[in-house]
Amino acid sequence: MIHIHQGLVRVSGLFNAVAGAAVVAMMLLTCADVLLRLLRHPIPGAYELVGFLGTLIVSFALALTSLEKGHIAVEILAAKLPARIQFGLDAVASLIGASLFGLIAWQSWIYAADMRQSGEVSVTLTMPIHPFIYGIAAGCALLVLVLLSDGLRAAIRTVKP
Image 1 (cartoon, rainbow, N blue to C red):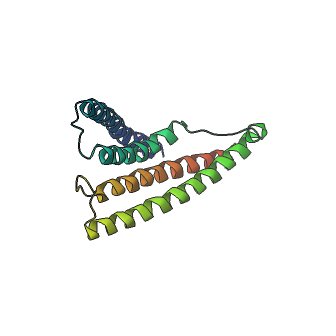
Image 2 (cartoon, rainbow, N blue to C red):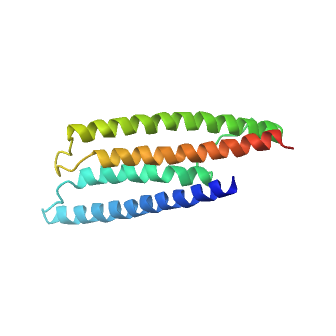
Image 3 (spheres, rainbow, N blue to C red):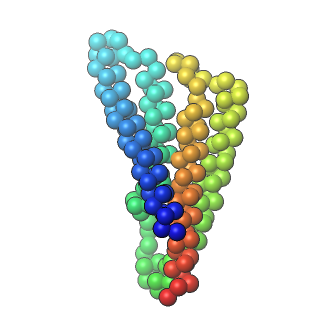
């Protein structure tokens, strides 16, 4: 179980590094576009590229954020419960989250395949859209693995004293 968790941490870190690089690329692109607009030479397709980079940023940062418990959690009532019940609630919440993001990953994969088959491209740059949708599916699938791992660990802590 520890090896699986360490592998998920490693892969999530790689995905997060891609998300970080996308943030830097988005910042540089936006700054360059603003400066060039002042000179009346905007970057064609900058808006499209920022949108594509945004998909990578959000979907590739999900897994590491979940591993580091970096999301917002409201635990006003749960904090007053015994530890074993808290772990049980964590296990159930992780299973629900894994189900939801599993559905998102699956439907994103199907949508990306449809986009690839139809040859859909962006308006300005005529760039294929499907790789970014596959990226969303991959980020969500990795989050599913993280949530299942967290849920399993919480379930074990629920039954073990």
